[in-house]
Amino acid sequence: MVDERSEIGDEYKWDLEDMYSSEEEWTEEFKQVKNKVEEFDGDGVDIDSPEALNNLLKERFELDRMIENLKKYAFMLRDQDTREQRPRELVSKIKALNTEFQKSISFIEPVILENREWVESWLDEGKLEDYSFYLNDLFRMKDHKLGRKESRVLESLGDVTDAAHETYSTLTNADLTFPEVERPEGEKVELTQGNFTKFMKHQDREFREKVFEQMYGTFSNYRNTITTTLEKNVNKNVRKAEIKNFDSARQASTKPDKIPETVNDNLIEAVRDNLDLFQRHLELKEKILGLEELEMHDVYMPVAETESPEIEYEEAKEHILEALKPLGEEYVEKVREGLENGWVDVYENKGKRSGAYSGGSYDSNPYILMNYQNDVSSMFTLAHELGHSMHSKLSSENQAYHDSGYTIFQAEVASTTNEALLTKHLLETVEDEEFRMHVLSYALEKFRGTVFRQTMFSEFEKCIHEETENGEALSPDKLDKKYKELKEDYYREANVGDTIAREWMRIPHFYYNFYVYKYATGLSAGTVLSRKIVEEGPEDYLEFLKKGGSQYSLESLKEAGADLKTERPVKKAMKEYENYLEKAEKSLD
Image (cartoon, rainbow, N blue to C red; front, side):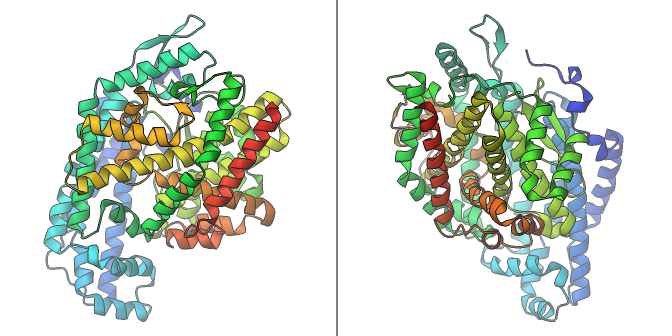
């Protein structure tokens, strides 16, 4: 059974007291920030000098920074046990305050754009150097910026427009429960989203099928509700794109990062061009499992012929620290310090948010939420999240707050670079053949889950937004049908069946507006950069991490050694995938 949080040792919990010593301290700071937000009134603001604009932007970003601290703490407090009501209240309070803040600052960009000629002359004179990237980017996006009144109205609806995602998250993390399943050994265990993937790698096929059917059967009971939340979220994306004069919701997501939509299109094309490699991977699974035909409850199975060896958390930490040595002693010591000093909330507990993420704020530790399961996959997840955390730490140490926030497109590079380094290290140093096969299997599964699966998700996301943009309604049957068609395209070596058509209901990333393809581009870039780190040194890569959000994503990655405007990183990643396939095939033969 899953433990209560109180039953888990403090050494395996993140130390949020480094942010706020108590809820009372958080509440006191909340009151102070609330007063400052209420005083921040843009009516009649005058920016008739560079000094006035500097002061305005300084105050704006200082307030934003304080709100981020309050928000991150509240969200992490909620996520460690989503059943607790008080943290949910804190989240509601800070979200409402943030909405008020966004409404209060909505005048700033329209005023700057109204005075663009003056501001550009001050930039040319070097009088706004601290905010040059922010201001030049604002001018680049001028056609998609609203006037004072429109901006204020839209920002005032922030908590409303986020309602679909919040409802979905509450349903799937706090309210939705799954039945107990009986393991082959006779033990009854509670099925959760946290242990689902682990159970899908169990050697007993009947158990896998039972878990598979129970998971998606439970989700099916809520298909109308989840369809409604997804449809409303897509509608929000489409309407906001229209209001801001974008051609599509996808463009509204990519253009602010200065990423052409062709990057997403090229990825889809390159992945579809390599689906034969993917079928070869599925055929390998069939051979290992001794099956005539692969079912969807078989696809999580590793190419290793046993269950994952037990990898205790302490052992995982040591493997990761060794693997990251090519990044330099200073990098490794920062990781070690974090692992030993309350960065990580390690184990699953009842009510805890599923999955994993790297959190924290500019001023705090880069905290990590895990649901560690003592297996190879969890070890790699820890390495993945540490990549995000070190990106955040190096960025905050080297950039001002307003230039520190890197994009998701950049973030997924740092995480997958760590995973690639861990894969290389383990394949070169681990002598236990079973362990090695699980590492190799994980590398293959990473491509399956991150490149092929996420690209398929990206196609689904693109399709449902285009349906809405064309005036079509989304229905449960339509979503099931489209999702199943994509599964049949990508998994043509397997018997797809009907149950998997419901999988879209358990994918939270569909609420993040064209987020998923960035996993695939990130892994491709991470594969390229990890090789460069080993062969040429970490300097360019570390510089990329330190830049944070002070440079556009594609430009910073090109300087680091991965030009994602071209297909080369994806093609190189596919070569690495093929290399892993050949190793696995050779080992099995």
